Length: 501
Image (tube, rainbow, N blue to C red; front, side, top):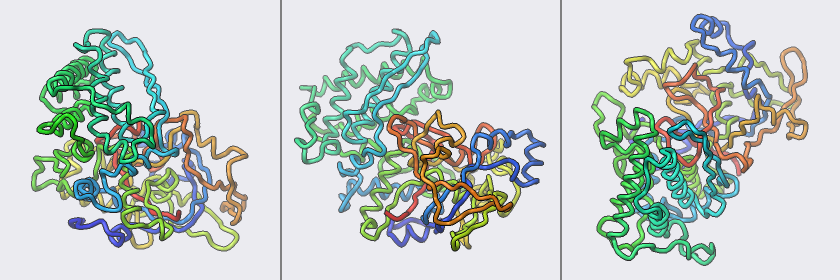
């Protein structure tokens, strides 16, 4: 991968693979897995049969789309962040409308119930309400406040704020300073300008609250966090998102008046970046350069905002195309199924063509042959390049890389914890695809669904696909995971898809 100079539409298309309209098996059946993989499964007790039982086959229709060959890189995402200070038109990183639109009716979180244990192992529930939030930025700020309060509450009074009002005051001030990206220019339109006002008269008051909240949060994490997080905090590394945000916010406020607004790009950018301009620091010449690594440590909404930004930057919607994140079926089809286009009025489909790992159409190695090997760093240049090539999926002469093993990947789908074994897709009222009659190799007619991503607002977790290098059990392209969308994670990135409006 060479240096990225500009995210032109030609560049985006050149790094995308066309996948024609088709019918494919979402999920997999162990009966149809290759004998080589079954032998490996028995030899190493990988439990692949039980993992596949959680996602039995549903024959699924998908229209044509293009999917990114790679996970989006730090260098590519940096262009998005840099569009803010450059004031790129028609939309940029600091545009209020962008962050309202990612928080639209499809993707907003209305509420969340977080179950947690206190230091005495008492189970409690924190009710989080985001119904009044007008944009992702406002919701993200609220989520940070909720997390700090929860961490302090977990200590059962061992940790307290010196001033009980400090937390509310401080985060009201955060909203005030970021009012430009939260409210935009049409403040009256949203009717909540009165709520975003400056609670401080003097800088000393802000500093006192900041120190109080940061001190309480840090002490709380030291009591309730895992050993790795505690060690990082002892070393002065801000690995927890609320403390990192407050550090960035404090730096952005330095040297300006209490009333002066601050732009979003100064406080919100990937959590593992040293600055808005990027950089990870301390990368040896033998390792994969920072610019080429997948961008991680961003929320679902930041990943989606990047895609919406590309759509508007290149005005692709007028061409009948949008850039967005894949749904579950689009990811899995790209990772597991040959490019078999619909043909005529009848189609014979063979479930044995389904590959539970992207590279199985070229080699029979299981996941741990490439990933999670003790003492071997995936990010060393030689290792990275070899594994990239060997684990890629070949489609019509082009390759799709990093489908598993290089990190989980955000999708646009919410997670329904009660939808076991794709139950919702099997319901009689779910839309069916009937334009082409589909049969299995024994002549049995197949029931084919017309796939729609799951978007029930009562669910607040979002599905991630792909697999991180270090994973409990074998990595499979059919495995599903779910995460809160208002946090960034070190092993979660994303890729784009382009599809008709």
